[in-house]
Each structure stands twice: as structure tokens, then as C-alpha cells.
Length: 164
Image 1 (cartoon, one colour):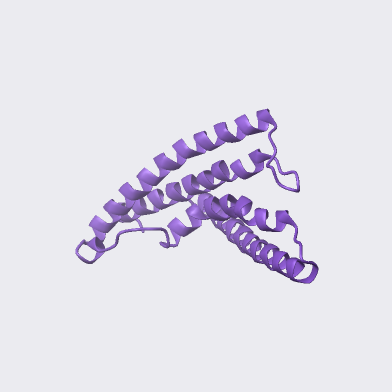
Image 2 (cartoon, helix red, strand yellow; image 1 turned 45 degrees about the vertical axis):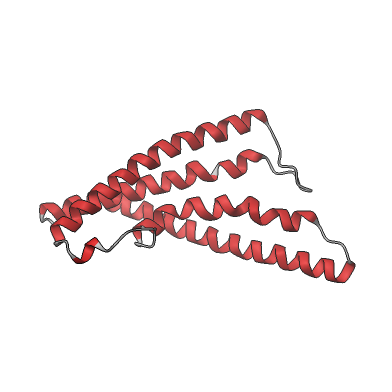
């Protein structure tokens, strides 16, 4: 459990740092695009095309850290009416569903990334970016989600057994 928690904490820090860097790049690219168009009258298309390309790397690696921090989408009106034991049971079920879903989507992400890698297709931008780079965010993000869900399941089971 300690090793899994340490790995997940490291992955969460990396995902959050990556997200901050991507948001910076998105804002900078759009600001540079507007500045370039204002000064020269024309701009670089890739400044505008870059932010949508980076969205998958912004979203998917954050799935696990957001789930762990309780900032993922959730319905919490029942929590006021449930006992602590019931909350742990519901949490275990939710995290089990997240783990199973993450494993399915991880496999699909690996398949999609492999397919686009083998096809060798490039995005139609001013700069050449392989399509598989964008799709690689799917298996990376769902692997982080699977590990986080596993940690949360083990934590809930530990709480249910009374060893915490």
C-alpha cells in the first residue's frame, strides 16, 4: 500500500505539473498568435491549432489525481444520509467501477495508439506532429486512474476491516 501510494503521489505531481505547463503553453500560444496578427497582420496557424491538440494531455492524466482529491464529477447528496461504513462501501464500489473502466479504456488507448503509430499518420498542422502522440494520453491517463482506483479500493477495504 505504501509503495502504491508513493507511486500515485509521484504520478499525481507529474500530471498536475504537466497540466500547468500545458495551460501555460495554450495561453502563450493564443497570446502570441494574437500579438503576431496585431503586429504583422498575419499569424502562424500552428499557434491556434496547438491548444486543441494538447487538450487530451491536459485532461486524461488528471483523471486519477482528481478522483483521489474528490474533485472528479460525483453525486454527493447521499453522503449526508449514509453512515461511515455505508460511505466506505459505496466508495469501494465506485472505485471498483473506476478501476474496471480504466482497465478497459487503457486497453483501448493502447490499441488506438499502436494503430496510429503503425499508420505513421501526421496531424495536418504547420508543424509535423504524429497523431499517436495525442492518442498516447489515453493509456497514460487511464493507467494513472487504474492505479489511483486500486489505491482507493485498498484504502476503503482497510477502513472497512477496522485496521485504519
